[in-house]
Length: 302
Ligand SMILES: [Zn+2]
Image 1 (cartoon, rainbow, N blue to C red):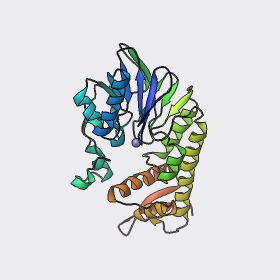
Image 2 (image 1 turned 120 degrees about the horizontal axis):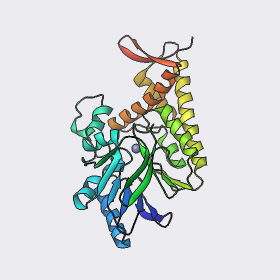
Image 3 (image 1 turned 30 degrees about the horizontal axis):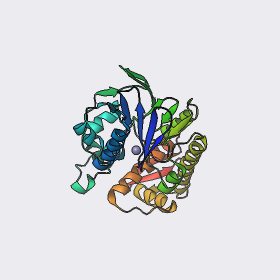
Image 4 (image 1 turned 90 degrees about the vertical axis):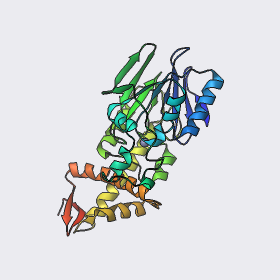
């Protein structure tokens, strides 16, 4: 885990999931996200202590376990005032909601409740409704609503640096994922267009590296989303009787060279594929139909 310094008072810990850090004053500082588990947080705290950097606040961008799994350990060991977007806060306080929604509301069996889907619950002191400036005593920063990858994801902007959470991925990473996890393709693309216009001098994605010239990476993300959408549309229009939904998930993953290795991973791809389909549905290009007791995706064109 490497600690990179971006400005006088802005840093990030580069790991498989990046963790941001902002020092506001001599005595106040905030982490942006908390990593996957206790072990990650232990390393972060050790490094902050070594450097004499204060830690008084925690901001969680969205309720995915790889971003908040280390937060329970932090809250147990340090006094941190925790801030998160409202809807995400509901999941941070009741993390079983994630395996529950991925498995269609079925009470999840233990193997579906693994550390990648469900972190330990944390408390949230301040639940944010809309984006904007957060000001509390000595701390001040701006939140940017970045929905699409998760329902109520917020990024943080401070000292002209954007912590973009999972609104976009580093180039290698988005290609490695094949089909990135999103919950809404329309919002994902809107969010990417929004980031392009933000007045910042550099950005840190949740997965990838800090870049000053990040527009190219954003364009690559946009291209990938459009390609997946087009691929799904072609798969659907190629079958006059439509494609059974689960078969479409399989076909899309196979075409992208993905090997699904476990049940929870299938559910994540299933959600992402659905998120592209709902965009196509809103544009009245495809629809869900029931045929012979099967959920089928059909083209809306003759
Ligand atoms: Zn995420």
